[in-house]
Length: 168
Figure 1 (tube, rainbow, N blue to C red):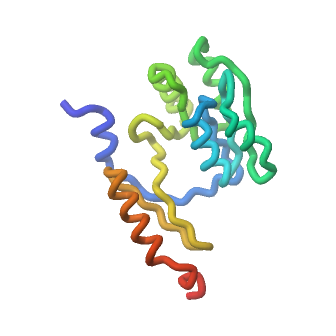
Figure 2: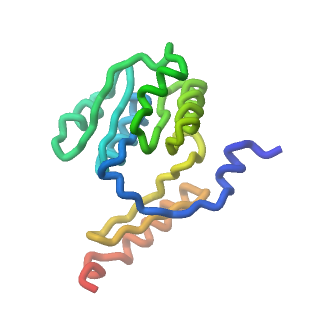
Figure 3: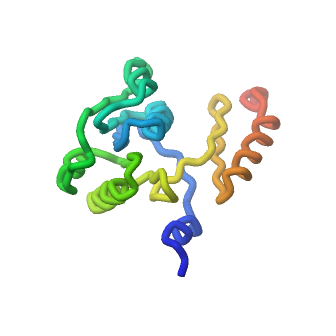
């Protein structure tokens, strides 16, 4: 019997470019993974990070006037599903990024029950973030089942896609 993550990774996925300017992304976890996700998503829209404590990098990101990051101090480990529900109000995407896999699954389940898209840090969720190559107004998204192949393709395209393409 196939693992659930194997089944999810083989599902056909529609590549989309989303306007997140007024869509809230809620990240559960203030460690390195939460920081990495906040760094990415805060380039595109508002981000709320929930955690008992926050990495120094997250604290610095939250001070950056170019980003809209709200750090909310709370203890997620002793919460009930209804507690997660209040944090998901108004969320477009939820990212369970705690160090506790069981807690991440509970947050994921509550998010899905509320109709909130989930970007998982362990396996494929509703939202899969591709490798992104940006050159001015040109954006190319690359996603494969192999991280090494994705990186290889992005590096090859970076060589080919010079700034001159912007003039076309």
